[in-house]
Image 1 (cartoon, rainbow, N blue to C red):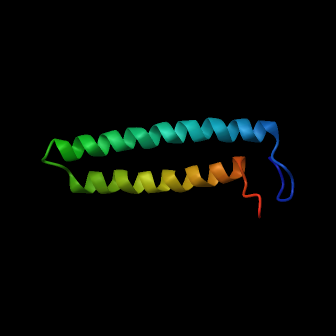
Image 2 (cartoon, rainbow, N blue to C red):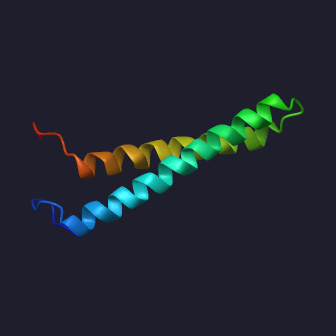
Length: 75
């Protein structure tokens, strides 16, 4: 993996891109699962809360990986 001041290698970018796509799919799947739980009514509030928490964790990781692939020019 690249160092702090180094440009990420093509290998790093490919690995991050693959992880990004995997996490995006998982995020979409969680959306669908939450929607299904809410739609069927007798929802398990704890389960919905856990799924939403996982979505937040995924969102943070997606943002981090996105920043690694396309870093802010002004930084």
